[in-house]
Length: 383
Image 1 (cartoon, rainbow, N blue to C red):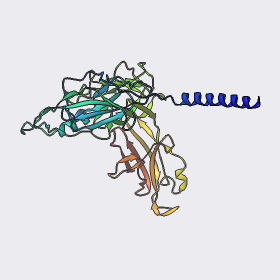
Image 2: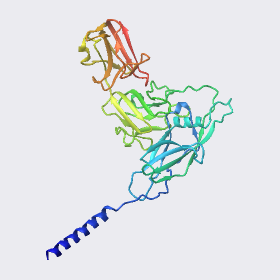
Image 3: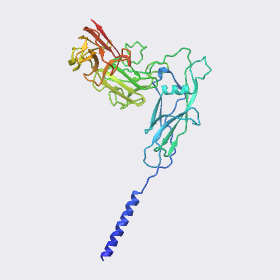
Image 4: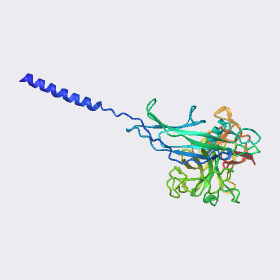
């Protein structure tokens, strides 16, 4: 009887083991996918100028690829100069179902296919590039491709050398009567400026009351209503979600009420931020010793001139705590080091720049002008 019991237990254990093994061995295998396709409608042609290099030329969107099982799918937006895609470059990679391409990127592709805007040359000013999607699972795994679409690129011919100005966005709002057109008699149009041609990371300082929008220039470089404009993706005026939208958007809000804001926006990532700033000076050039680094001395902002000023005494000489340095100052916002500015290579102001030496002791009118995006300046005027 004992032997029979032992044998029965062994059989039960074996069946249970095999059942578990079978359950664990179930594998869901990805299958070949088809039907990947663009869902956006492309333009008949893309007119490209340096003035609009930072503008969004096209936001490609597509349906999600279905490989027959739940799995992470990556997408490459691919570009080729020929319709057979014998040579391919990746424009960008994402796991979402959209990706933006800027005018600046298309200008680079136009150059690759030999376009120019000089009517005196034999080179064409119009040509076509091709885009397609590649969806894939893992490295070396299954992949699927969309049909290709052709983009007709046009460089407007000109007999004058067009200055390659950095891309900008106008910032209209109640702070200047909601007018983005600087040629319409409006007193002032504040701007954000990109870091470089083709980049969409805009930056600038603007005095804001409560709401604003971001307006792109048209092909002639003019800012006006009717051009593409960005607002808060919530669709509600005054909301501050930090997400931008081109359609069904609301006016962007500010998080901390009326004041002088550092604005950052990225029209490719569709993000923005607004940081309220109150500026001051700090440094041992204020006191002649290390105590000058303890706290900022507030400056005053003039909403008409858009300049921060302070009149105060400065002390020149050798730093008592470091004989190899002189007494110096810096500028910082909100009595903290998160946002600070110092001297750059061209005697301008840059974020996190170097300390500014006090030239001689005396009373100074000190100013900082942050109204020109990415071209910030300061002055020390001995009284």
